[in-house]
Picture 1 (cartoon, one colour):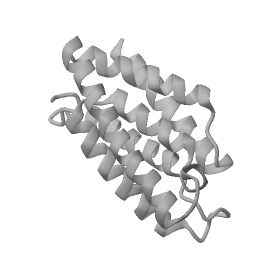
Picture 2 (picture 1 turned 120 degrees about the vertical axis):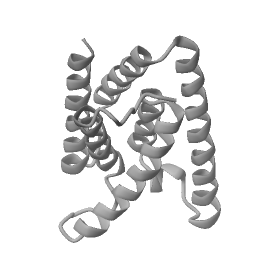
Picture 3 (picture 1 turned 180 degrees about the vertical axis):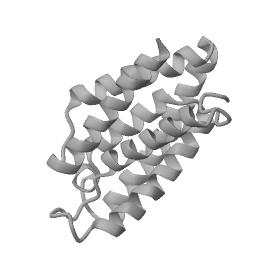
Picture 4 (picture 1 turned 180 degrees about the horizontal axis):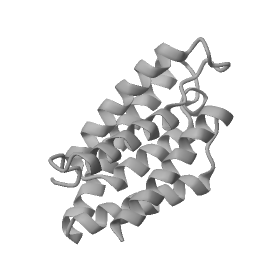
Length: 160
């Protein structure tokens, strides 16, 4: 059962990656499917209290980061937040928050941001758009982490 859900989740993340790279926008339905599948995977690996506590802490981290981004966009860049940061990116952050326990979330979140920056710097000349396909690149990173978690059993993605 878990393997089937993991395959569906990775397929959903692959679709998300493809859409963000090609169309520079993401379907809400793909994000909802990813949120649902990632949440199920997380729930199946944790007890209910740990699952809920992890999600609440992860959402709090995202809210704090988003608050800082809003202030930065308003004060420094003098723009609306969604002129400099995509709604799909925020929704993908929430997908990550629901899909992983707190420590895994923090590690995947931080390293996926660094991965996205590095990949964007390396391929920005080939892209027609000057913005970072953040949700797509983060979904690619999450795919790599999920595959590594399956291939190397010593990596425990869902431990606290």
